[in-house]
Image (cartoon, rainbow, N blue to C red; front, top):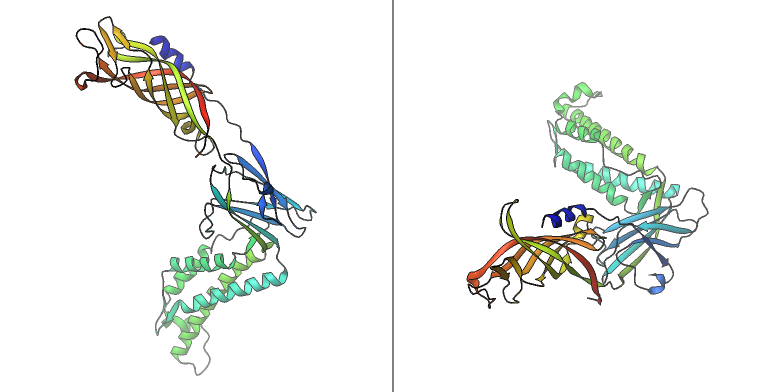
Length: 393
């Protein structure tokens, strides 16, 4: 047993996994991939296809269903270099697809936004923001009241801009991250504004009463807020915008059928019976069983893909001493359940529990008897072979 433990510790190392790409060609006219063949599964993809000379960006999004209103499983984009004559896009998809499944793809094509498109976008955003600000304040005799908390108002203003920019992207990866804290400070300032101080801050003409002056002061503050908001939006809208000019949607496209692999383990293990480290009783025997991995390498971490739940049977009874032989229930051989870890490509370490049944006083092995069943820990080393590779779902 000590020799077995030492050998197992030496084998605790990991084998590297090398990522590979499979090329997938998108046919724009026929709206399918690889001449209509199923998409490769369980590997990263390299998507390529034709792009018009005016196209500066191609964006791909992958969805698990045909409902593209939900958040995409994966997105990536290709951008053409400025002044490049390239008419073909190539972009990696670092999201392995599961076999025997269907996915929906959306490919969006963007071209540089013209000056008139930028001006129209700014005008639309400005109108929406100004309208929201106007209806979000109540001006009374003494103060200005916000209909919502300043932070909630800033969130609403952000949402208006995000919605307006749905059909636009940016050439230089400059994203609109929302309105600044300066806008939030201005909202809080207006919310705390007291109009009775209006005459100190507004130049009043002759004949204007206090109420007129207060209203004028309130409108000046709201106008300053609108100017601040529109200036921050203009900084983004004028920075090399790309406009959506074409889109392709491929619904429920199938992936290739993958093989279900069953792992067979054949090895040698030791079972502890009693005693301490210097003086204990144990027995060893060969065993065989199957293992079910807790994850696939392409979809989970290296640790979980190498870890499995194993179950099997010892191929002979365990002799702890001359007068102490153990079998197992039902199959008349010790059975085990364990966690396993693949330390080398074909070598798995198992550790778990063995279900045993003691022999009778006459030293003969009998049928199932619950009073003579007991459990002991075991550890083993096995070779792992994959088989039944053509079992598809």
